Image 1 (cartoon, helix red, strand yellow):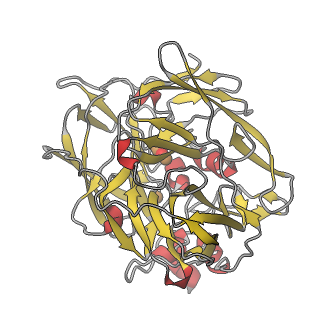
Image 2 (cartoon, rainbow, N blue to C red; image 1 turned 90 degrees about the vertical axis):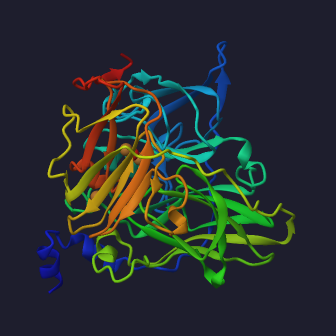
Length: 481
Ligand code: C2O
Ligand code: CU
């Protein structure tokens, strides 16, 4: 009967079986959480802050011995944390030491499309691509990852991803000592085949790979020592397909302070928060001294949604990270009552509709690198109405902008967002403003961030143009062009 249900909605039963058999739970917290190093930078004579990021392969001990073949940035797994201030000009020298073409995309960044690192900005083996732009957006937890069309899932799964933090003055009263009371938490589920990462088994599954082991910053069974009254955790779901519903053991609550694109206007106390692939949340936790609460993922709470759990692994429970609070904790400032001024996006003058019609199509069309799907006029505020009518699980990510989710009082959707979860049958209306960076030749992407879906075509392209301008055929760049 189970297979029949799978068949009815057009899925292989593979993802379902995976999701059921890997309802894990307990892990032993035996490894100190790895903290990705901060990426070193230099400032060139023009005042531009310059980072060197090298995509490479290597081997990493992910809990199955030292010989697991992995990819990383400036190292063998994941990449350094890039940290910049609003107002800085930055240049990223992205060098490709892999044996194959890739790209590096700045997820959540507001920047010119030609600098975005999407499928059109390919970096060939041995080449260096050097985008530069002015960082002009509020403090936020962004991230970077490859975006090569058809290969994003595999490249991210092998290990290329990292955090990209933006600071501004509004972060002053929150814990901000990196690795001490401000901790990156990059959560990924992995499957192993012997001592190797199993990147292939999900290739034929509709959802993509669902792992049965959780890594945080590449650490299996991680714990982190807490030495201050309050810690900020920057949660990033960098998994290919899995949805997490994060909370703590012992009924410990937390304070949500930020969403994908930055701080929310007022902190809100929560017991759990759900993140689909690509989404972020900044939370502040006051861990009682001498206690060891566990960050865990519980089954997603989405009402009577029948499909959710089995197809995005959201019915599973996982232990994620143990917090080990010292007997004496250094004092921390209380979380400010007000965090960020709500951003006024203006009144919408355009509405667009996007139906997620299958796991490979938007408005019944699959991604075509040479087709521009939407033409947006610079300076316009729009509503994008996304309806998931496909019967499966998706989310929706828009490049270049941070949007507001309309028609909801869910606090986890109250701040700036660039990715939103869309269980079957759900429609979301997203308010967004395209403030600048018109370029009729360079498209931005919108897509499902379940990476197998993105690779399989659940993606489209938009350009931002000046009034009256028309889009022209997208130009590729092959670094260093
Ligand atoms: Cu995080 Cu278009 O991607
Ligand atoms: Cu999808």
